[in-house]
Amino acid sequence: MKEIWERFSVHERIAAGGAVVVAISLFLPWYGYSFLGYSASIDGFHSYGLLAALGVVVLVFGLVAEARGVKLPARAAIGRRSNLAGGILMVVGSLLFLLAYHQSSSSSTVLFSYGPETGVYLAILGSVLALFGVVSAGRSGAAG
Image (tube, rainbow, N blue to C red; front, side, top):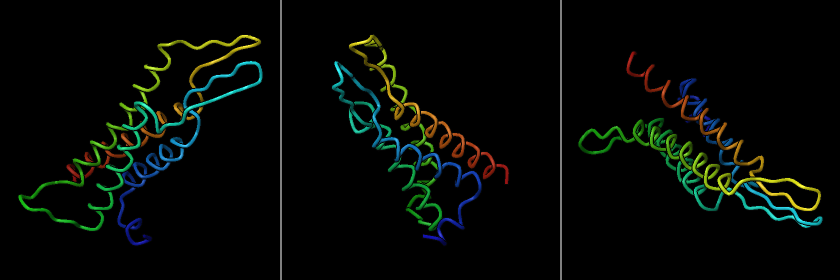
């Protein structure tokens, strides 16, 4: 694993770090309810959060495939394409989750509150970071 990490460029390390942030955020509450001291929440493995989870898998697959030098027939640039697809899936999944659940509004009163939680915001931050890393890696790879 260490040799794979050492093969990553700085931009790919940024993308990998963003993917790790999103992966961790998937286990945190993304949306929560609280009523009279009782609370419930859902994590990132629900609804559009699954797109973000799929994005993490696709991005990690692309990064590792590219670092290990996997060659496919027809010169498919599977690494860079899957990196970009993974980054986009993470951003879209996180934002759609927030929009879908925030559309139902959020409220806070003395007895009842509901709304987006920390996990979804952390996922958006990580996915934007990962997408930034992927796009900058593509630009520096195209320039160099």
